[in-house]
Amino acid sequence: MFYVSMFGQYIGQYIKTRLQYRTDLVVEFLSDLMFQAVNLIFILVVFGHTQLLAGWNREEIIFIYGFFLVPYALFSSFFNIWDFNDRYIVKGEMDRILTRPIHSLFQVILERMELESLFGAITGIAIMFYAGAQLDLSLSWYDPLLFIVMVIGGALVYGGIFVMLASIGFWADAKTAIMPMMYNIGNYGRYPVDIYNGVIRFILTWILPFAFVGVYPSAYFLGREEWYGYAFLTPIVGIVFFMLAIFVWNTGVKRYRGAGN
Amino acid sequence: MMLAYRTNYYTGIIIYSINIGAYYFLWTAIYGGKSDIEGLSVIQMVTYIAVAWMARAFYFNNIDREIAQEIKEGKVAVEMIRPYSYLGMKTMQGLGEGLFRLFFFSVPGMFIVSLIFPLSFAANLSTWLFFGLSIIFSFIINTQINLITGVLTFFFFNNDGLIRAKRVIIDLFSGLLLPISFYPIWAQDVMAFFPFQAISYIPSMIFTNGFQGNALYDAIMFQLMWSVLLLIPIFVLWRVAKKRLVVQGG
Image 1: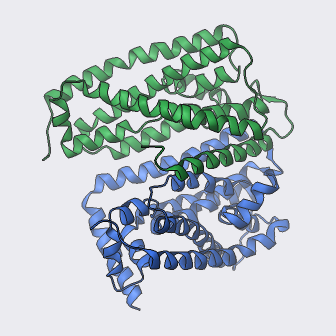
Image 2 (image 1 turned 180 degrees about the horizontal axis):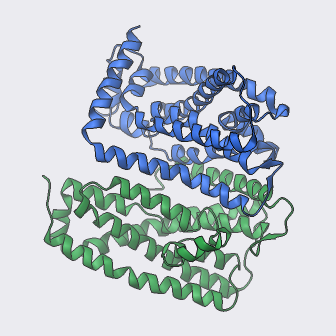
Image 3 (image 1 turned 30 degrees about the horizontal axis):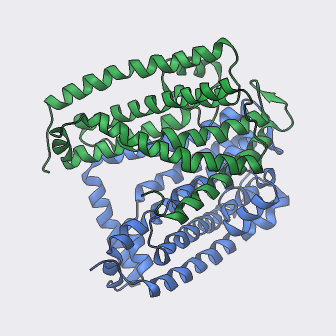
């Protein structure tokens, strides 16, 4: 309960500070939209030259991209920890975090959230509806519920991977460029995994399970029955990865010694 | 400074290889048995992507962000009384970082990737010479665009949005993600009026032998023209900016 009220308090403060600089906020929305458009343009241009990508058509790939944007928006709003190492460990801010009465990871998440990224979810849902209409997909009453479960699963997968990467900072205090590059790898989960060879498919499924943020859960909504097994694994993989990440984080916090004075 | 963090360096090369690997399979699937798209075979296409990312390590720099930061913090006032050209100094800093990445990251990375994936390397010397010339122009044009975006901070005070928008435009229209020839004709016609394709499309096409005969000279002329043209807005903006400099604190 205490955690929920803390969460509410931080969100309230956050909205107040953001609304102070409105032009900046508008510019951010626009540049987010442009980032989302780049990938869409990539798909459109590529399908100007081919009809099928390993048996998937243009609208299906667009649908996967739309789905991907929703968990990704959740992830980027609440797990904005790509500069954790620099900001908290090198500069010694972690000392302050550890004096707070809530779990250290939760405190970091609260401080670094970027709620405006949630608008990406609206773009994503709009893209899904557009592609879904082109494909004549039908919705059952339980689909929205499954959608929420899958989205949370996907966001947890993303969150888990990045929390683990951030935890590396507890062991190696050198700054690292792994995070930005990992964003790139995350993109490959948006394409049907059957185009990759075994090694990359295995990595995307079990080691860096980005496929659970894009193609696997979308396969359920697209009615691709051969992938249903993987699709329903999404929430489980999400929870397992996130628990693992919390474990790694906690172990790391125990090792934390503080930097400088 | 960059070699001080070895793990960083090795993971960089590994992740670059994974990236090229994923692109390799993605493009193979896109080709799906077609022998060529817009005159590029699948091997040429993968080489194109690999070279485009490698060349990016050379021409890429963050001086727009740094200039914006120094203007915002007022440090630029101190820089201006120093006995060198501020913009020239920033350019040389970018060149130094770029050369380091070219020799310690691009060349070994490219070597490793070429062991794993079938890439086509040009056999004749002239292609390599033209490619070398062309990435120098890439660096010049990309740096000029960065200088313009950075200096615009003098007028907008806060231009984070502009810097991000510039990044998106460069990714999309420089030919880093997709060769310009893949775009619809009308889009290609529009892009011919902008300098962006000089940054990535031209050197990568030269490397993959995508340009033949006169197209090669035209492409180099296109780069030369823009690297001269872009000097004008830099000088004008810089002159005006110096006159209306407002140092906020500092």
